[in-house]
Image (cartoon, rainbow, N blue to C red):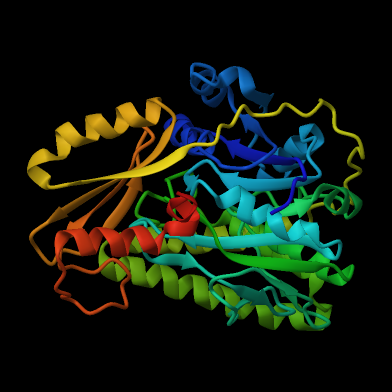
Length: 411
């Protein structure tokens, strides 16, 4: 682990309840020195200001639809040697930040990224990936239990996910932070490419996990059906101008257009879109691309010194505990678990029915980690459909599955 002070930056716009849940999870982080910088619209700030730990948060008002500009403003106020980013629709495991920041104890490491679990809280949305010269992610095989420091080959980069990444502040400032020409999408990919071009190493830390909900926004529904592709087209145009040879851009764009059209057709077939939606969205993609070809590109000058001093979040060394329950007792035991959280514990509630139902994990506004499913059902999706266990043994297995991330290994 590292004793470096770390700033966690959360950008939020139009999702106050998601922000509240994210901040509730951040308040349980087990990390030596960290601060939380909240860059949010008025509604988000108003929601966060009523949280019991609001006085320990840095609030930075920002209400424009530009994720890169918002992250840069957060970076200006971040006073940690390391800056970490998490989306407002994500929740970190309690040891996420300590694990994500640990590789910065090596001077060559300029960035780190962790794994991202999907909506069911079990499957992985993203694992280790690299980027080729066209910005396309490729899977990477790394040790799943420890950090791996990578120096990408020339023209390639190491991918960090926007909802689970950290950077050495001095390096991020040096390369100009996030490019505001990316209003949404590819903003962190561009940073990854520029870091690699500058010769910096990136660490991938599989056990530094966040759970990502993919909350709806103006560009996608809660079911991840696209509502607008303008910014995606615009961001690809910006990326091409910065990273792809002019003679390769037309062919690259045609392949991207086809991939997006195939995605729209898949949603049409599944009932998420109507035929007129496919036409409209394809047109918006092209209009965004044309607009992105004309957007100004400039190196952002960011201050080397933070605008505000480090505001240490009053984290406490929390006991990690669990409660094993059954559906008939869930309501009562949920109240018990929430009371323990208020008393300063990290609590996981295992609710196992006598079935083979698949497992799901979620984190509630009450600060309780809830895992539900069948006593004989799958948690990891590559397991057998049915596995026979006693209740005690199943709880032991599930505790072990998240022992490092949630703190059971520190008991």
